[in-house]
Image (tube, rainbow, N blue to C red; front, side):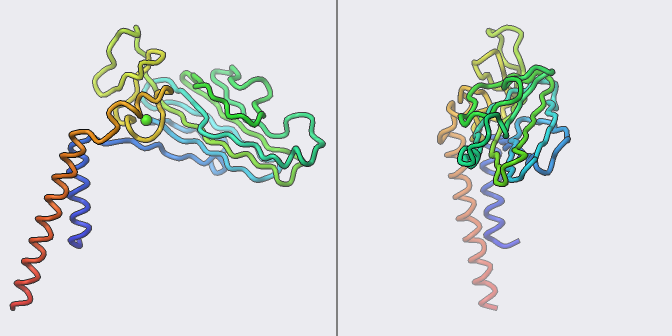
Length: 230
Ligand SMILES: [Ca+2]
């Protein structure tokens, strides 16, 4: 291992030990996971980037650790080409999100241009389905969904169990590792605001990392000088 990569590892371990491990969402591309079941451990990003005629796909989403699921749309885009063609009066492209057979985006799916802004409670199982136009050669649907496993408290006044973070919304807790990962898992941004700046732990981690870097540079320099002398 080179001195530079060794330094990187030392810095990373020093930071990790002081700030706690973070979880970043696994990215699931629906075009290659049609009819699959997606198991959510922490959170996942579900992406649709479909540029084809007559494309459709459905996935089932389930929690891994006994919680329930909450979904929100990070982005939502239906191509404007269909309005140029001007012959469609219905909804050639749509997205539908359902939980326990209850449609969350309306019967027949959602096909407006605006991003749905709610946080959808999927319970123990959700399905996510999309369909693109049979007619429009350039049909495209670009959508990104964040799905998080949450844990409901019995009473809103209860504390979250150890290892979980209180979202202070709808009595839900999320895993501590989802804090400050850059994704709004709580649905009110609380997990991305509170304590996500330069905390004391991070500053100490940086100082230790820098000290380790200096020490390694000195050791390498000493070794190199000794070798040159021989
Ligand atoms: Ca988060």
